[in-house]
Image (cartoon, rainbow, N blue to C red):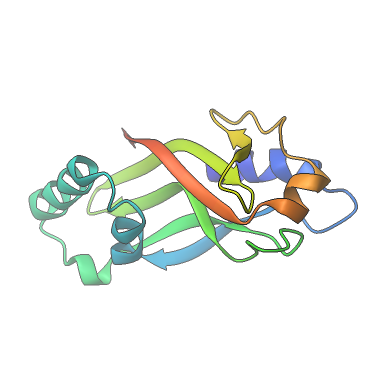
Length: 138
């Protein structure tokens, strides 16, 4: 879940605040905007909203927020996201890649493995790319 990944990345940064801040809320429409490159996933989320008969404007999700030690990315949201949609809890997981100023991948976080995150990544990552998103119903 969200707290586990945040805790794992936070352990790397004993010299600073935790790498990720769990529990930051964001509107459902911001989550779908972040997933706009994956229309099939957005379609499935929208179908679930319709099935559960809830107003998407009232849905609030939880997402991980990058901490202040990310020189250029502090405050940005990354996977995973967790949304309560009616009676269902949906977790959106995937791969998070951190890119340098030339667009090269300098670190990847997938399946909770954050072993590539270092102080240099905190300093040099200029962009985040999220890929391979998938829904997990709880």
